[in-house]
Image 1 (cartoon, rainbow, N blue to C red):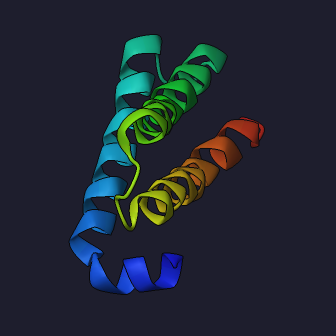
Image 2: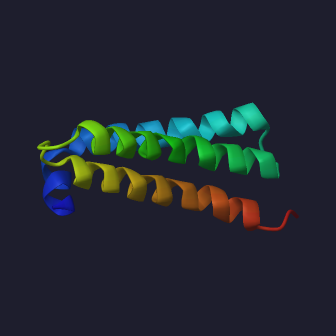
Length: 94
């Protein structure tokens, strides 16, 4: 289901990636780049959107085809785009 959704909705994937990147950047800017708080704020900001979407899907999403693959793809996109940020944070300075 995910592969089919991905092939038929490339614009949606691009929008998801843009939203995740903006969320990660916003978290960094609000909490301060290079700090533990900046990393935490970035990750929380990016992962807040799928949580809200899952809540709405559970309440109002009966019968909407492609909704669950889209949400799963958003979470996977968030994980993939967050990995470089986490990796850079773990790297020792110097």
